[in-house]
Amino acid sequence: MSSNGSVRIAGGQGFYGDTPRSVEGLLAEGIDYLCLEALAELTLAILQKDRQKDEARGFTKDLPAYLAAALPEVAAGRTKIITNAGGINPTGAARVASETAKQMGMHGLKIATVLGDDLMPRIDELAGATALAHLDSGARFADFPEPALFAAAYLGARPIVEALDRGADIVITGRCADAALFLAPLVHEHGWAWDDWDHLAAGTLVGHLLECSGQTAGGNLSRDWWTVPHPWDLPYPIAEVDADGVAVISKPKASGGRVSFDTVRHQLLYEVHDPARYLSPDVVADFTSATFSDEGDDRVRITGVRGAPATDTYKTLLAHHVGWAGETRVAFSWPEAREKATAAAAIFAQRVTESGLSVDEWCVELWGVDALGGPTVPATDAEPAEVVARVAWRCADQATAGLVGREMVPLTLGAPPAGMTGIGRGAARPTELLGIWPTLVEKSLVDSHVVVAVETS
Amino acid sequence: MTRLRLHELCGYRAGDKGDISNVALFADDAEVYDVIVAEVTAERVKEHFGAFVTGSVIRYEAANVLALNFVMHGALGGGGPRTLRSDSLGKSLGGALVRLEIEVPEALAERRAPRPDIGWAKAILEGLG
Image 1 (cartoon, rainbow over the protein chains, first blue to last red):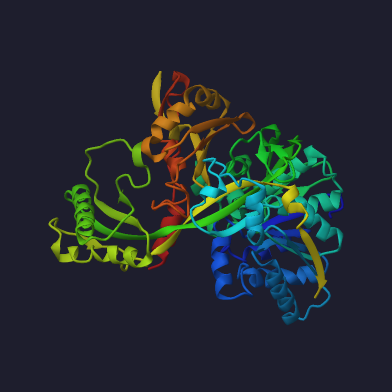
Image 2 (cartoon, rainbow over the protein chains, first blue to last red):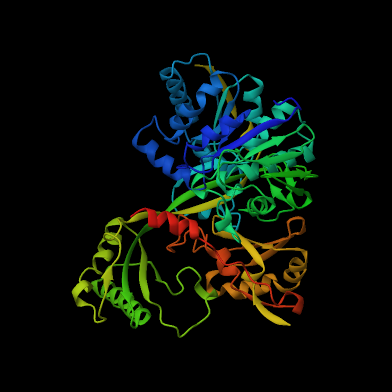
């Protein structure tokens, strides 16, 4: 905690595969808490496959790299780490964290795990107790098309705060709301009550701004994106939050990037639905109530955030197998590139149909014409300099998805349009498609199973 | 009145949750914000995206950051891990939105988005040899 009573928290990771190089710059600034957000919607499916191969896995493999960069500051008592890198195996992640500390010659660190978000072991019990209705379609779990690959509730900040209250230096969770990783240290340090809705909302808003790492500091910017300084050295953001919930977003000074009103508002609405009712497990935050003051010098002050009581449910995500996808691409240059690419896609699809291979869904895109813009692209007679036809397909089984792609190969010499050329280095192997099933589960069905364990390394 | 693409007046960012894409539209200033509140309705956005968006479009206002947020259901061909589209997360849908043309008052008729100056990028690439 700084001399004015503010807590300094940083977002050092925005997804599984982000760069641990971010950590050094953040630690050099002096931060009380380094929060590492590792789980996108899909990530649990990846981790589930890892654990099927090896029971000891199921957490994000880059956790030791982050720990190696940060542990000296942790051991010195200057910084604590909070991460959801535990995935579907926080206990396994804690074991690896302990080993990493040992290899670095550090002992006596308190490593906490939060368990209870993983609902897979209880899925039948829960399906009996609640509808598990799909949030968008309203379909009930009885209509769930395949066995669940994972089922995880987005827990809130409370178990993390419990771990910090018990002296944890490192807190490892599984699925929890991204913003909760950042709210928890603020609640722990400032002693905010669980019905102090405005402060919980302020901390949640700050967490939302930090959870996507570089996206608050000039990453994925529109408008004057080319003016962001040294974009190859994009910093990750820091928030200084006082006991009244007033926050200043900034970045390490010795870095590129930018923190401004514009970079902050770009992140404020990222992956948000109703900004006046941002639903988190801990509070319903009103992002439209906040005032953002650009103080210059890469500092934005946030005041006045209002909150309302949390709901009685946890958002929960399930996933199921849908099928197998393959794709292929061919390129044509001027003249008649668009027409040739269209014809080649059609010839390929017709060959597949006549071969008797069963395709459940097709997707034909013309890169260079309207692949990304679709119906929003105005019609034009202008001739593109080149066009890539990308064709993707879905099949029920992996083998068929692979065989479909082979039907493009003979077109190398056997396509009527002149000038067909490949791009890339051959067709990718089929990939598995997953359906996501978002639902709500009563907190009372989850909370009694949440366990916080603290062990000393 | 003049017709202008939203690109001349607004920034944008798209995000994904399951099969839902949200595209936020950031007005350059309060004058532009008033215009987009009047002009860029959920119905127009739904029409603009045509077959790309199979479900409903809901609009939210965030006046404190001069932004509109469009929540588009059925916008990602089934959602990131399920879709066959190359842009599986809909990252490009922000740019697609600002292609929309709206009527603007004469006071805004001369507004144009700044053109990228990427001299620094060219210098790096030339230095690669």
